[in-house]
Image 1 (cartoon, rainbow, N blue to C red):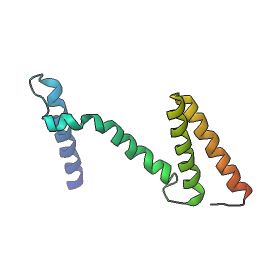
Image 2 (image 1 turned 30 degrees about the vertical axis):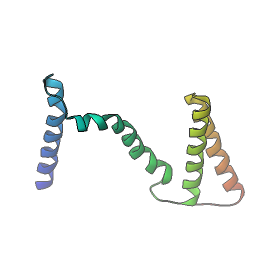
Image 3 (image 1 turned 60 degrees about the vertical axis):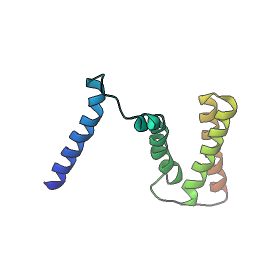
Image 4 (image 1 turned 135 degrees about the vertical axis):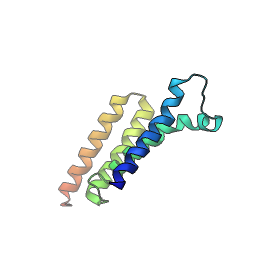
Length: 110
């Protein structure tokens, strides 16, 4: 019961601290907070993506991690070169499939 109460109180406090800036236009976040707001999006994206790239099945293994990391690097490089999202996605997928095919041909298994 104590855990549920802690989660509910945390949710209420989190909601209140975020909604106060929407309800009253006179209330502004401190300048120190405003300075870091543009960094929140990339930080959240990294927190979601990096574990999925490094440990796709929840554990670090050569068979799962190496193709994912190589595909992510190729995808990023192609996107930076072409500035086209679909080029990066397609290149990353082809790289991932190719590395998996090479590992399978070499007889590397999970």
